[in-house]
Image 1 (cartoon, rainbow, N blue to C red):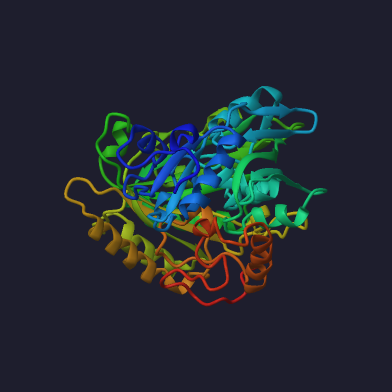
Image 2: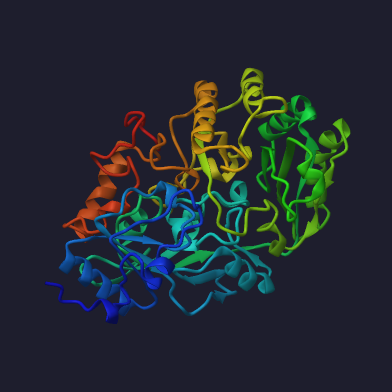
Length: 472
């Protein structure tokens, strides 16, 4: 018999309004369907929810915005907690640190830091939750300068399976801090994170779009530039088939387009430096053909989080992800044959995100995942609309995967993984064992085990995953 009152804890069952609110996801192709759900706003509510799960023999799962819902396993035996803790972002400008309550999205951090001339290691969307992003490593739009966002985390507070509120930092349980940062989840309910910020008052950022007919000339130029690109520049090349929607600029709806977007950090003692670095990239590309739409400009860090023009409303998407090595001309041909003009690609977006720089450098004070040993991240996906079915999209993703397989490193970036069944691995066998020891100490009964990413715990393996070779 249940000893914890559902009404008092805010826990709801399917069909109740509170259940619907707590299970909202951003990827509508992957709805969350737990046995019960609650939105938790205090440590007390989290403790009560864990007690309820124990009484009902349920596992505990955690999410915030639901951007990663497709990467979550089945939840029919679980209580799902949506974390929305109050307090707002607290900036210490002297220490260059932001304290961020769980449930806060990156847009709020960007706005809070900007008045102090500071920026945060955010990704491409202002609507992604900070805590989940950094726990999964986090590949920032500034990543080649900052490294993985997880390495910027200085402290994490969480409630563990025993109901204890713990703080993990360099002086208090550093082993837990290490495991939380990229270890694959399954430790407890995070209530707050503290992250390092960095100085950035002016940047050059934007996106330039060309008809994909020019892709066979533009893509090789971009690839050659990436080989010696400075760390202050992080870019993405995308081949896109955008729907005819009012919010999408008209020139981008006329057919397949190729986009190069990114951000260039400026120099405090040389305001023109960022512009010169941007021109080194964009000048040769613009010489091939004039972009049909071009937003590259000098700006403040506030504008960077909107450069990628990620969707602002929930939508369904089916996609895939790989970490790739260097890409020769043959790889370019394979890629464009499947996603370029005339390919019939159903994918809305097929992108190559530039890695290297600080993203590839081990961090002695970093977490379980402290670097990415790859040159590019491939991320592709499509939206089922206008006759496109999930089977069509999944099938095309499989063809792209097969075509790029020769350059696949066998590794993945957790924050880019698109679905729970795709091959994925980001930790070496030795690191998996070390992280598992931390989990066993905090959660011996496995209450949070359902939140562990595939291949991030001994005995777990996602369908189709490669073996446990060293992953750094």
